[in-house]
Length: 127
Image (cartoon, rainbow, N blue to C red; front, side):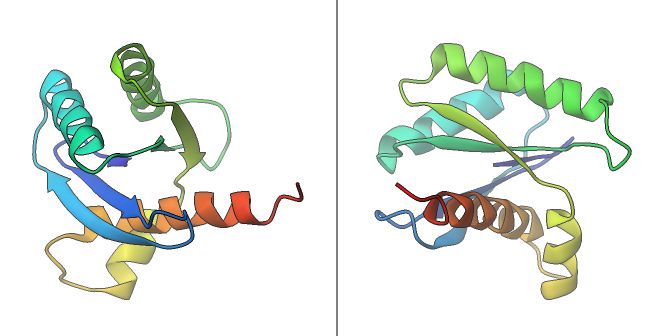
């Protein structure tokens, strides 16, 4: 997930966790409704893990946006029957906008860039 102020982009991986695709946009500001939609998608799509993009500042430390995402992640972890992980999402929105200028669903594309990075990192680990 790529959580934004007014839209949250969702992406899904394939069953093997190798590739992903943009899935949906949750055009909602209310955190409770965002969490409800995420839980609904997780059930319907039989998600095994939820990965949330963490908007880390380039200078390090924390900021208001990152604190808001961490708060949402904590609530999601309490309510979700599947594990919830976080992953660095820096530059994913920029990549999505550059890769598909004018695209209506760039938030879901940004979520896909973040998820693919997460999947790639898992496949590069030695057993």
